[in-house]
Length: 546
Image (cartoon, rainbow, N blue to C red; front, side, top):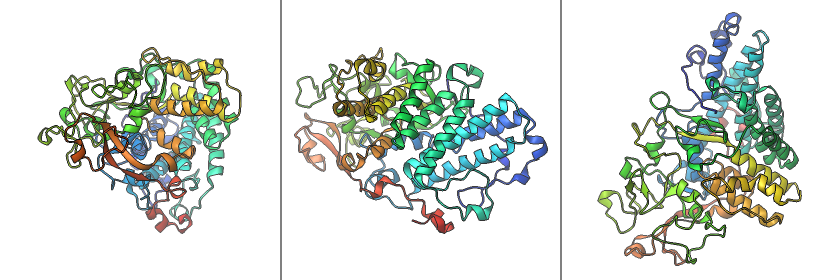
């Protein structure tokens, strides 16, 4: 029940101005400090701007925020789960393909948006300190601290060492601020998440009239993520166990409904998420990721690697050589989440057949090739669409999860595994098997208790369960697997019956399974595990140079 209601935020936000570098300073003199913070409505209005951050209304052509659809969902393009149709010169592809430079525009946008939200939070906390003490003030302070800490969590995850700014800065201060170590930033985040969780209401206690505001479980989940980055497995397990023990959240019985406009906002699994509102603050996700037949640009394309990670229905790994594999119906005999997440040639989507093959006509935007505005892998995303008619492809009521209870359960199990704790069937049934046992999924329960084998099963479960939610890249970096899985060829859908495949694909699949060749990644170790501070920031502040 965390539906972001993006209301107009005119009074305070309109008075903000950008100065110096992206470590922004917001002038105190533009507001009447004696009067503004004495009115709860003014404080709530200011708080709204903290939640919105830099998220863009409508169509996004580049990253606007860590929580915008382009910034969060399309982070999948950095991974082995997806490919950006814009090609190998796209800023996303360059981040994880051996071409990462400090002038990458998307990295610049992530940095700018994070420090903008941080600046807003700092300004808010300083202002509200002058307000009379009340339960409402205590809660709003906790919300601002939570939101600020989430941005430092992301910055420390990707940029590592960055400035830790907890007050408004003068122009001179902003241009001379120094970096803090990743370890110290994460330790600071731990304190912020713990203390904000203490003052935030529980998930069950937030009324419908206040949906969109942070809850205790959201802060605890980010605390768990932070502990996982620190490899503080005991701390992570404790944070996630606290969420579990509250009992406010549960696995929703229908996987697909978690991502649909009408059903993604009233369930107990989506702990914290962004909910766009059509004709009010909608998003352009449909325009970007629908196929040509539905008026879209086919920009985000699932990979063969993701397709292959979904097990057969009996829980055994997928294989092209298995008799259960049906090249004419790729979802047959497979984990139901495959068809809930992606679709492919011959599948029905939004009431009509999706056609995509090397053999089809380019004029109809149905031919898989290297020049048309079509999927470059042959696969497309079904997730986030209930398949009802969409009134405006640029203003859609998408629901994009930030924290789901499924992630909480899987992360809790990971913390137990990595802490060396013995895992029994009771633990498995509490965690991974609740996720796999969802009513419309019903995959066989996991019984493996050997930690090394269970680790691999868990990592694959995270991949398929959380696909296209912006988690995979974060996982690959902290597992130190990016140097392995993000090096080599990128493959698309299989076309074993295609007449033109061998003469139209740039490279023939050496496995003999006729997968379409897409491109190649060459993630560098160790360079690409750390994002460089944007060149524009380094030019302003010598202390940020690397």
